[in-house]
Length: 398
Image 1 (cartoon, helix red, strand yellow):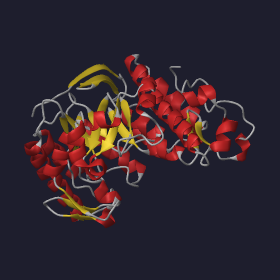
Image 2 (image 1 turned 60 degrees about the vertical axis):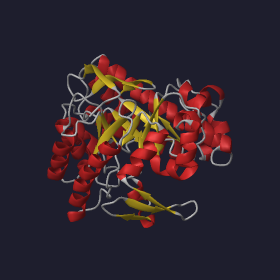
Image 3 (image 1 turned 60 degrees about the horizontal axis):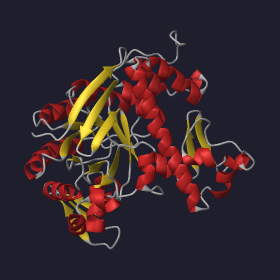
Image 4 (image 1 turned 90 degrees about the vertical axis):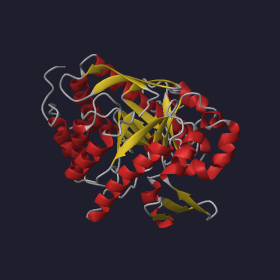
C-alpha cells in the first residue's frame, strides 16, 4: 500500500539487533529509536505543547477513542485536525482505540462488526468499527494511524487469542480499504497472537502481505511474565520486515526500553512517565525518587545533576517535596522532568548505536540503575544474553 514516510537506517549495532534510523513523516523528522509521550486526549497531562517541543519531542501519541468522544469528529473536521486543535506542529501517532477493549472491558461489547463502548463521560454508546476508526483518524490527521485490532489481555489463553488474531487481520483489510488519505497518513498494522509463538508467526506472515508502511507489536505489557514478554518481542523483530519501522506498544520503563532496543525495536509509547509524576515520582539514571518522602525536605539539589529541564535548572528536591501531589505545579514540574529523562535516554541510546558502543552503554545503564549485579532483573539478563551481551559479567570494553 502507499506510504507517506521514509525510513533510513543510519547504523546497526555490531553485537545486538539495535539500530539507529531517521523516520521522515509529514510533520517532520523523527530520530529513532524514539519514545513517544502519550497525550491521550490531545494533551500531555500537565505540560503545554511548547514545553513538549522544547524538550526535543518529535512525535507524541493521541488516542482515537477518546478524541472521538471529546471533542468529537465534527469539531476536529471544523478546525482542521488534531495538530491545529492542540497547537502541536510536530508529528502525531494515534492509537486506534483497540486497547480500550481491555482497559474499558466492562464498557465494551466486541463483535465482528466492531466494538461498542459506553462513554465514560455521559454513558452514550459509540460503535467503533475499523471503518469508523479510520474515518476518525483521517479527521484527526495523525501522521501515523494504527489499525483497529481485536485486543485481548496478554494473560488470556485458549481459543479467544486465536480468534482475536484472525479478526485483527480481517480488520486490517477493512482499515486499508477505508483509509482515505494514504498520501499524507501512514497506516501501521498491529501484530497479535498473545504469548503463542505460532500465532505470532502466522499473524506476521499474513500482515506482511499487506505491506503497510510500518508494523507494531501489540497485546503485550499487560502483566505477563517479563521472560515471556521479551521472547515475543525478539521473535517478532526477527520475523518482521527490516526495511520498515517496528513499534512496541505500551512500553515505558527504562530497563524495558533498553532491552527492547537491543532486541530490534525502534518506537515506543507509554503513559508511565507522566502518570508516575502525578504520584510525586521522579525518574533518574540511578532510580526513581519518591519526592513525597521526608528525606527530601531539606535536600537542595536538583532532581538529577546534569539534567537541563526547567524543573532541574530552577527548582530543588526540597521545593518539590513541598508541592509534590499537593499542588498542580508539582505534577507539572515532575512531568516535565520525567519526559525529559525518557527522551534523553533514547538520544543516548541512539548516539551509542551510531558510535557502535551500545553494549558499553547497556553495561553502564544497568550498573547505574541497579548498582549490584544481584539486583539486575533476571529476565533482562536473559534477553540481553540472547543478543550477545552478558550484563552479569564485567564489561571488558570500557
